[in-house]
Length: 521
Image 1: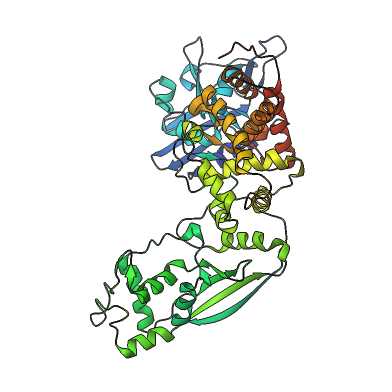
Image 2 (image 1 turned 135 degrees about the horizontal axis):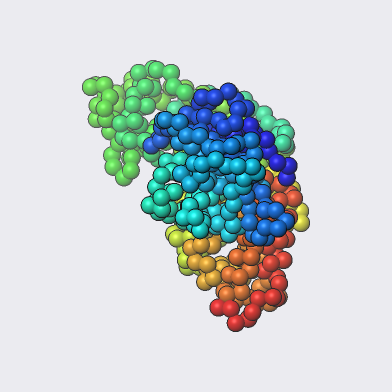
């Protein structure tokens, strides 16, 4: 990879900080080095003088595991009143920053001065997010990934003095689930408007002709919120429209408007959360009224109020489910963004979905990940593993479509049985769990989906023809995470076809080798 200019390196650092929610203002002209930056974030407000160079391997006569920054163009490091001076290196291949301690480098630098670090703390930071290298000079050099840059800035003094303790393993932080992945495909959709009376739409909900997908079934409005919506209709106020989509069975899924429609449904059937539904927090003449106790005029007015719906239908039967999936993804406007697997769960409900839900409750899974309460992200990890194990050769991005197609094709276990998938999943989980426990699949402090899919495919492949014990698996895993081409493939552009092939084949190569002693336990 070509070296970055100093101005580009500063830009990388600024973009990294901004991506974590910080406000960054240049106090020196852009392109100037060092750059003086005012940085403000929650728990942080400081001005930094930033020196930054490319991190590269040491020279030909240096140790093979040495990396360094060459402090070109600087005779000494400055630190003016009110500033914190940062001395940084950046390893672009693995998106790592190396931070040297300014207090150990306050004198003149001389000619062609370099600052060094060993390779091991670089790889430790890839796994844990942050690592600390103790130099013989008593300097603490800090290595951190892009996702931990703000942590470093907030605890700058404590980290360099050795007083800060970083908890490396974030058990439920998922990395690389590609929630923001885009698709270049074009879809043929038809949308049209329809007006429903309240009475008609409630009848269709009762008959399940209009329905809430499984993952949306939670009704979160309070009794007062539901009452206020019903009151708006009784008073004749306009209300927002709803969004519906045709499913493959000719029924209509509620994409947007679940809380409003269920408020009407619960009011008319007379029960909300197991209790009688009387209006609450509304006009005095309506307070406490149930649907059955409304006056004739009020009941008639409510029944005949119009709810406007926009209805979407795919014109191409071959991509109907995928287009509905994308409609959910793009148009659902609830307060909490739905995860990809939550949407997939509704689109492709069946025995395979039941299998995924059961798999994350298995002891072999919970020993590594704990108990799943992560809005179906655990299920998506298992789906990725199985899809790549069976269909890796046919993979084409985007990942979303690849997973959708695999889940659709095996919706009711038509292609792969529970017993067959268990035989792949559970032994691999048991071995990697015994080898690494909660350290398994963590990269940058979180669970990395690309590490998971590649290591699991590699282990399952090995186990089809040969045994591997936990000690051998641990050795293979540790060596794998020292492979730079693998680390790049699990950290950047992970949905690209080349990255998928590189990481899975590299993992298969490491786990398939017979160089590990059979006595390793």
